[in-house]
Image (cartoon, rainbow, N blue to C red):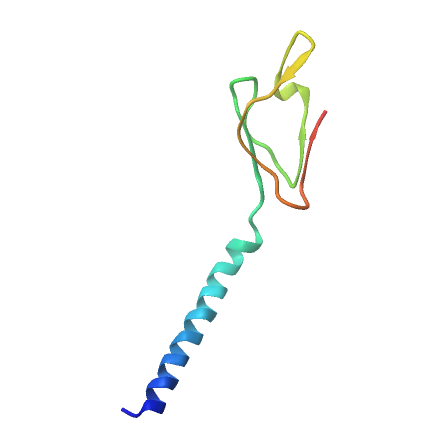
Length: 85
């Protein structure tokens, strides 16, 4: 085998690997949303729908003059919002 043949083969393999990696990871990278979920210890449990999360007082508990919420996950990405009302 010549040096040129080996170089082309390695280069072709590397390019195919990069293209396949980008193609297969693209759907997973573009559709990832933040995750906000209530753990259920202070009221309703489960995931909230985004990308603009509306967290109302009915989802928590009022004790005295304080409102409490408890989250299993609270991750908000850039461009998303979480509003407590």
